[in-house]
Image (cartoon, rainbow, N blue to C red; front, side, top):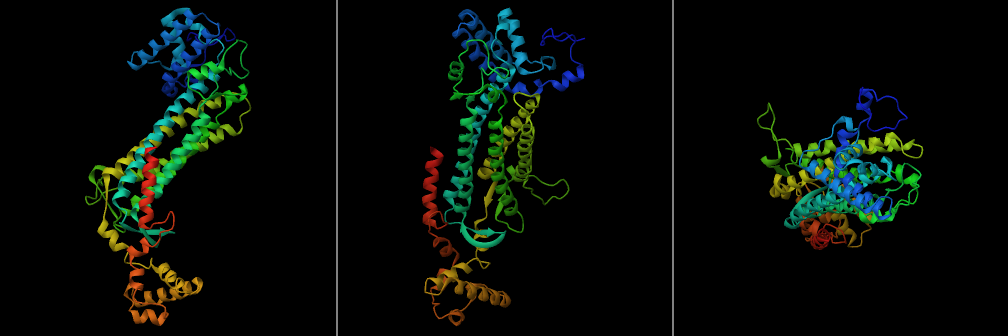
Length: 461
């Protein structure tokens, strides 16, 4: 029988070995160890500050915890399944180092508020890191955009050719998505950065603790006003997973476009060897593995969000063991988002090249300038809806004749409507079609240049 090390005399026997393994979280919550140590040091300082333990005992606990940290960083402290979780592991090792005073660390604290504190410290740190990954992703989008203001690319709606746009304008759409992602994470950070430490198991404590003191030591903005809420709240985790899911949505949309663009049917980009793989049987293949994996990994993060929502939907107050299931989803989502942002940043910077000649050709081989013909007539007094229907008929007859609008003679244009003049050819040229869309936020070159200036300010803020 395994020696009981963690439970009170209420229990007469140890857990069944299989149940002990099932119950344990040390295999994954070990990731919280340094956050646990940091939180415990703040708690020890508070116990000494309020006179619950002596200043000497407080210092001994803080120093001993720092030794545990060093041992872990050096690989000398590697707790196993018998520790159950990271909190017991740290406390046990601390007691081995400093003796019985180590047993005082858990005074006025529960694992419930302890794990809540650790998770928030971890997630606060990870949000900061992810926002930096987003900045790097935005930077490379901006670098490519600055070089391609006047590079044209077909724009699509319903995956059908719609209107040509500046390639820079297209990429800046993803820049703006990433900007919202960073801002959204900043907003989530506010609700992550609230301290539950001192809420105890569910009802607070009889000891004269100072929760605001520990919150200040740990750089929390505030403390939970209700102890029941403090130990059972996982709204912040759900919000983070929502934000992470949206990051993955945006990366997946870009991934889908890169996959299409690299196909023989589009041929808009060439994948470089550093970011593509081959086939085990077809020697001619070059596969877009990076965007495919990003697209695939998106479902993992979505799954963790759904799992967290399901965990929370039926939990009565306050803490329940179900909440142990929050960590693996959070950890995996953090790692997945960071890995995908890094991979997509490398792909954009080093792994693909836009085929500008093919893009220039692509914007001349369709009817995506039809709206501009209607606009041309509308600017000359023809009601837009009338012009719209007129141009629709022209497109229909041109398709039947195997022509594009640019192939029509001036005489043919004037048969359609006498308002057409020789300047119609300039008006429907792809470059003019793009340049003319100079409304705020549009794809006109002047607007795109202004958008790049604004984006550069955002990324440097």
